Length: 386
Ligand code: HEC
Ligand code: HEC
Image (cartoon, rainbow, N blue to C red; front, side, top):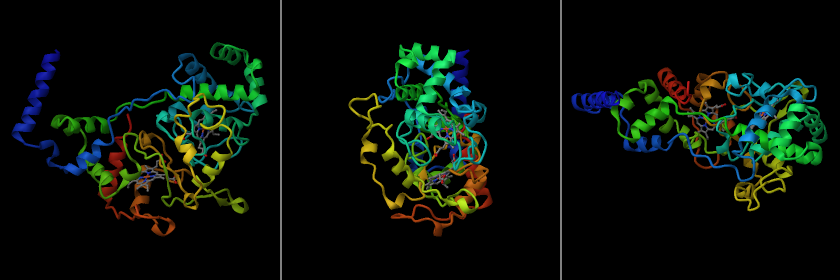
């Protein structure tokens, strides 16, 4: 059986390569430079090492406990919400809303929770520098789950399942720890669980791998429209400058001209984006430099140590990964764009006057034709597993 399959594959390649040289590429030829640029978006999945700042990273019992914490409503003041209310597994760990809905409407879009081990910063403004610190935020935020460390410790003690799990993972009753310790422990278990939410190979990855091994049959399986869109993505669209590498993000912050007013009527104000993110990071006791990190060497704290507050950061937001984007509408930090087509249209007619771009002028209106817009969307859709 296996030999037969191999022979058929060899035959198919022979036919393609012999009868129509370069058949797979004839329709959409890639230059050497494009090939190099495309290969940079893989291989996928990336290897991920455990997080040294979280001693529970990769720990099976902690992952199971973290999963339980993620889905329990005991972590919300009125017992009405859980993490999964805004990050629902059936919706690619988002909520399908423009902005999150907690006890009140939030200012920002609930992001998907995939491949988080590769993030350097967390949240749209990078207000935290670790997954466990980011997991503390919604627990304490008065607009979200709205607990205090003391109230959380009481909830974990009173809930049979949660207190039993706590003892199993931490070897002590929650009451034996200070409320802040309980808070950090709970957040680290939540982080251990969220690290397991990874995504597999997509049609794009299979194309990229085929390109890497010069396999015309493998390359031919990738739709022509996606190939044309990919050419724009790594070429004149300059998308890959920011949506860089295997996870399609350079991990940093940019302003792409999304209107960033939040609130309504008299309460309307500007979302400061990364500027506010840096300020809030500096005030936060839960960072990679603080006493709650489990890594005595602070080996992953370099970015946090070097971060500076710069007026340029005003209105900048984190470059999101584009993996699974087809499943995470609506888009942008404020959920203001409903479809991938709307996103591409935004880049096509980008309001340059609204951007304060420094050197380079990365973003210019692309003036894409209807077909080019459809091609770019077709490409973006191949970054999703299904
Ligand atoms: C009421 C809705 C809501 C709830 C409940 C909620 N989140 Fe979120 N989550 C959001 C929003 C909105 C953001 C973006 C926040 C920002 O950037 O300001 C976010 C961001 C995140 C991020 C950052 C992801 C990234 O790519 O940087 C993580 C991780 C996360 N949430 C985990 C959790 C966990 C764990 C819980 C439960 C303890 C939780 N969330 C509860 C709405 C919610
Ligand atoms: C200068 C850097 C930069 C360039 C170039 C760039 N992007 Fe983005 N992209 C971002 C940032 C930053 C955001 C989030 C902005 C926000 O929420 O305000 C974003 C958001 C997106 C989103 C929404 C993702 C989500 O989950 O909400 C998509 C899709 C996207 N970009 C695709 C593209 C495409 C296609 C191109 C090329 C035409 C491109 N980007 C070029 C920085 C960039």
